[in-house]
Image (cartoon, rainbow, N blue to C red; front, side, top):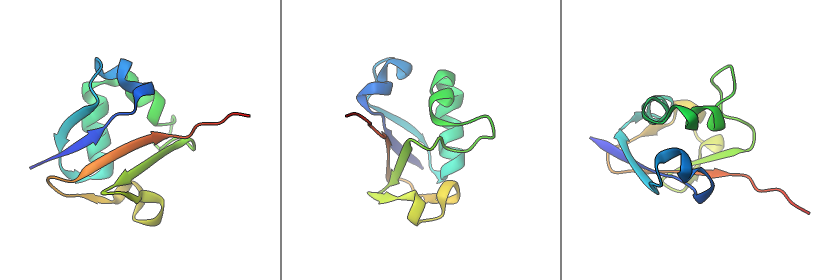
Length: 91
C-alpha cells in the first residue's frame, strides 16, 4: 500500500535527483513524515518549525488542492499521486 510523491525540479537535489518517491499511503501528514524521514533536508523546505506546510508550498492529492480537502489530514490512498508544487514568484 504505497503512494507516489512527485518531486518538483527545484527540490530534486534533496532527493538525489528522484522525480518520484514511493511512500506508504495514509494521512498526508504521515506521507510527508515518511518522505522527510528519508530526505531530512526536504523537511526544512516543506515544513515550518511548528510542522505545518510552509505558505508557499502547494500540495495536491490526486489533482485536488489539500487546502480544499482536509489539509494535512487528507487521506492518501494506495496508488494515489501526491504532487508538491512550490509557489513561484517573480516580476
